Image 1 (cartoon, rainbow, N blue to C red):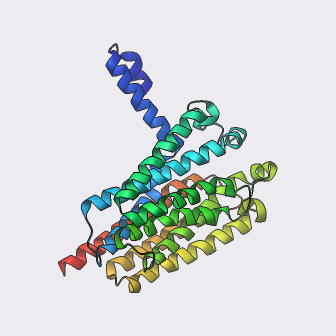
Image 2 (image 1 turned 90 degrees about the vertical axis):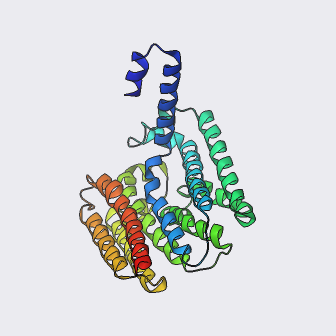
Image 3 (image 1 turned 135 degrees about the horizontal axis):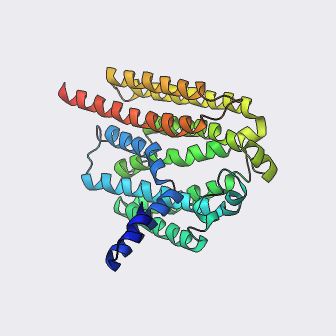
Length: 307
């Protein structure tokens, strides 16, 4: 579509504009920007829960969202640069932007530097505590790219890095590391780790051949799926525990039930002998879980204000 726009336009300014759009789309694909839907709703849920006890400013919400998106973009950029050679050898990933040359490693590094700078700026705007912890947070996020070379617990480490998002919102708005928001982070950690295990089942043969570590490569698809199920049971329990801890109403119970059903469906449509629907489980079921959680907490908050 963008290429057609470029070819049809004789206006140099228009051609430059469409090339810029094409570049943005390419970088967005590199970092899978659309996957922000998995984590961003958790950040917004944290903000809704925090504002019940602490005063917040609209600008703070904007800086929190910017910090989350920029940190994730930088981390994904590092992952793509570090894994460029591996991605080029894996049939499933060889068409990614760096292996195909659509984005050079140098350009990706510049992108990482800019995204990191935006994250540091957003952290500074959220207060001294956030700014002081920003660099260690980036170090944790970047180190994930090397986890698969060291341990088969890489999925849990990925879950941990993403679970820092709601905790980060808590720190930004309450200026403390301690509070019930840890429950939401545990839910996010186990939810992410569980579906990452399912997704990694596609690469069992390649990971073993390349000497990479993962739970499916270590234990096989059947046992890996049982581990993913256990993690999702923990995630469900954590979601349910939010009901008494945050004093939610009946609308949230309905939300938890829906999330439980979605998790069950995810595991029913994927089996060790048939991974053909893994993308449906990964891209559709998981995005629904996070969106349903956000809508449920938002509904809870609206009903709370109406009573």
